[in-house]
Amino acid sequence: MARFVVLRLLQAIPMMVVVVLLVFTMLQLTPGDPVQAIVGQFPVPPDFRAAIEQHYHLNDPLWMRLMQYFLNLLHGDLGYSFQSQQPVIELILQRAPRTLLLAGAAFVIGVPIGIGIGLLCATTRNRHVDRFWTTTALVGYAVPGFWLGQLLVILFAMRLGWFPTQGMAPLISRAHGAGWLLERVRYLALPAITYAVYEATRVARLMRASVADTLGQGFIVTARAKGLSRAKIIRRHVLRNSSLPVVTVMGYAFGVAMGGAVLIETVFSWPGIGLLLIEAIRVRDNQTVVGVVLFISLAVILMNLLVDMLYGLLDPRIRAAR
Amino acid sequence: MTAFLRRIARTRHGPIGLAILLVLLVVAICARWIAPYDPKAQVGTSLLPPSSAHLMGTDNIGRDLFSLVLVGTRASLAIGISSAFAALLIGGTVGVLAGYFRGVAEAALMRLTELFQILPVIVVVLFAIALFGANFWLLIGAVALAIWPLEARVIYGQFVQLREREFVAAAIVADLPTSHIILREILPNALPPVIVQVALDASLAILIESGLGFLGLSDANTVSWGQLLFTAQDFLDSAWWMSVFPGAAICLAVVGFNMLADGLNEVVNPRAVRGAVGLPA
Figure 1 (cartoon, rainbow over the protein chains, first blue to last red):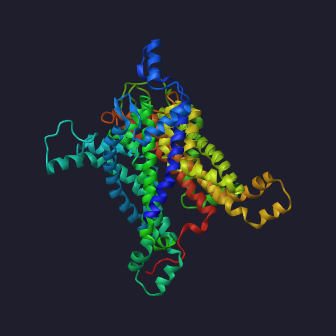
Figure 2: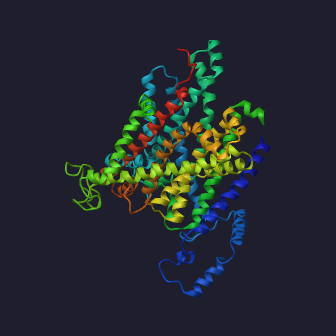
Figure 3: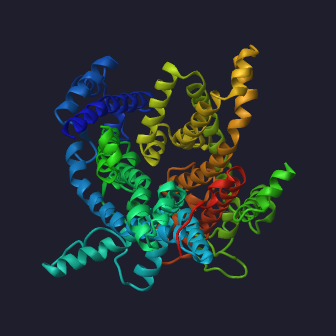
């Protein structure tokens, strides 16, 4: 297992290098003048420009800057955000736990519900139940997450006043202990629910298809022939075999989620990675943009690795093949 | 064509999807004439709730929301459909080359596809928009850039399978030109699942476009549904209608494309509808 993990990590390195190259080349193609961007809407004095260009090696050839960027990456240096006057890595590390919290809550709520609905749809004997939930999942899938967020804010935060409209915590909080936790949960509730609905509909569709597929397999015939009960077949044979594609897709989705749900974080002003990215894009803080894109790619690659390891646990055949 | 439409009409979701899209298409084409007011003009007090004069109320600068939503149909549908076809073109080329020629081309192109799949869609699009700004064509390009890997994988899968079939071997033996084999022999046979994917891509493109609009990153000169939601974000407390109606329009379009895709899928792939064995009672 350890050998497998190391091997996969080594495979991830060229992937990351290509991502850096891609991102770096795209940055070269951008219109705009970095010196002007630092100064803002003022004319730039020529000697100041020269000093800046000297200091940041702006006139070095592309390959030299690229090498330097790679060298810096090896030291964990993702560049410096002029906008917030902080190293990019600090910004990302500060935001990442919040995104993890939001995504974690959403997946914990959404994935089991989705699996339940999918399983119910595929195994129910009542066609209407299946139709109702498939259509619900279809419509749920079509609802843009950020719009659902707006609707929930209008209804539960503004009309009913049950939850705060945005943010992660009050500006000044005197609560502590259980009160503090409850306060945080109230802030987390709406964004997490919005996010969970989105994930649940995706899982439900996937799970239904996957279970339907499993039910067509030979071992189900065997299980029936053995006289196993319905519940036993579902628990022992269907659930496990059908969960593989769900694990793949959800693992990938969780990696992507580390990039922050840009849209949902925007609706609720949840100060995570996604909001960081969009803020950086708005003010053209390119170092931060590149840093965040790299961080997200890394997160996805690591999650995919984790999924591969989970596979082995879920499916002994794959374990044996290694 | 009529026979094909008739088969879609017999599926569960197909006819509903088709009907929704037809209505939206008519609205998109005739928006200027159906719209009761000039969508760009101030025609009432700002933030009026829905009434008989303004079916969906007015926005923060007194424009008629109903007219805006109608006109927004055009941009959203145009970007959705064009992006899907642009993605088909890029993904199709990659998938065909990788699937037919195999070898080095296959390895390189499919690695590239994987790479793009690793990068989250919205990040790719945001990144492209951030760098190059947003106008109508760039937007289509950016959205297509994000969704082409889906298309490439489907077409690649089809080509890899079909390439080994007898009729292709026969065509090769008959010394037909490669372009003929690809375009006239294999492609028509590879199309069914591709059509389904195009419909799904269109719905995805509409969602992405609306997301960009919501972030204030879409083309500022064209009214789109997502852009209306961007403005709505600041008025959630005072004007719920600014959020509810444009969002519902997005849902409608996305549901339409998804239902069409469902219908198409049932037509081209009738076996996949329900498990064959089933469970004991």
